Length: 101
Image (cartoon, rainbow, N blue to C red; front, side):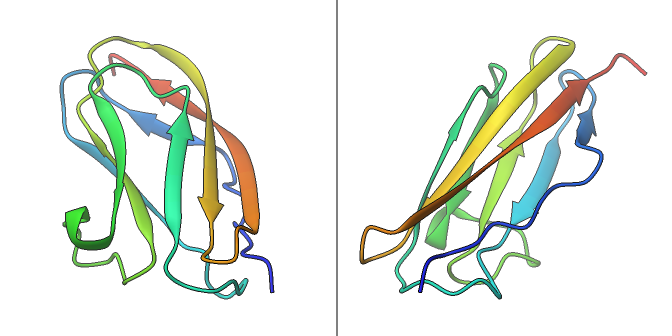
């Protein structure tokens, strides 16, 4: 079964130099754990983390979260990819908006 990423409706808005986080889950889409995650297009100061690196109490094993403090304002098309143990993957692109207010 291939992992499925749900669509992110409306994108995400963050403030520059302030902590910003957003969780992502491959559930209930399936796939075979363990999952690896990647993110492309993130602004400087942000990254993706999963497994034991994910600190949010709302992030379950196998999930991932974007985390960090973006350093500059702007609009960033971010692409998230999850890959399962069998090599099957799912990708989703959404808008990350970093606004002064």
